[in-house]
Length: 357
Image 1: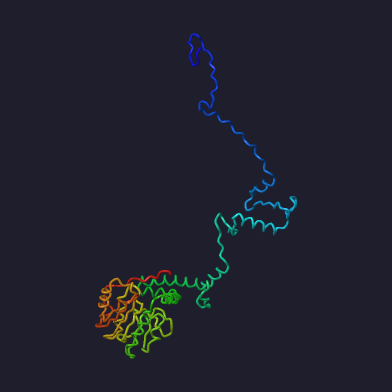
Image 2: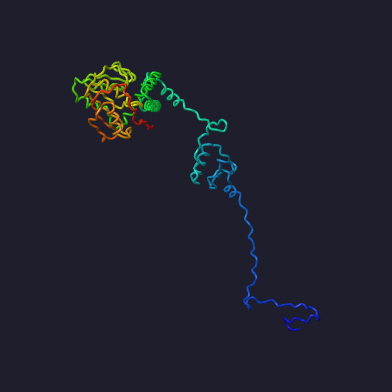
């Protein structure tokens, strides 16, 4: 039978054997022989000691050198200082210098328990003491705490004075005798932060009037005006800070009618009943007497409305200075008598609320 010839079915199957193909002759690539795996070399004891890493956190292993000066393998180094030095050198060489963590705070109920340092607690106690005690050093912690407490109390009292009538403000100071002192102590702190003190300009103005003129300082505070001018000055406020100050409500003073030549309101137009302030000023001022006013600029929504309200109280505007930053200055003159019992529309200025600095 010829090669590759299929025999007839009825002749039966016959096994055909093919001759092996020559890879070089027919261009067919021979099968690749499997590569023999090289046997792995066993690591020496020195290598295992070098690559071994301790699993204990915060520790590591190291090995001694293998030079001629190295100690015997079975010798133990008991010098702790030398070990610490070797560990430190190893950390620096490997580039990992660990920082020691501060000890954690004591916990109570799963939350951190904060403890107040003794010096801080003592400073807080000193800050809460009365003003009769010696004042702390200006840069001490007690001084800073005392300043913050004083400023907070001043802002609270200041807000109350702007939102109530003068009678309620008088009752407030009668109920708390220390409130007036705390208010003016905080007021002095605020004055130091202003670009200028408007009272200094009022003092310069009063020095230009005749020395025989009698002055009424309504809401005088600590009475600085009376100490700065040669004129006779009636200093009046809700609480008397000195013996020469009259303690009274400035809507109802003990002065006689038409006894003053000048009335001064320097940052004292507080409260919601300013019409009663100026009706009392009309009562105690002589005809053609002057009224000098200094107030914070931000308190005025409409200056013309303010002028109209004073006109209803019997005062005409002489001049105004609203170009000065932060403060407005006015001068009015009494042109007619207006009885104190006259019913007028109540008016007030915007409150001046100081922010925490």
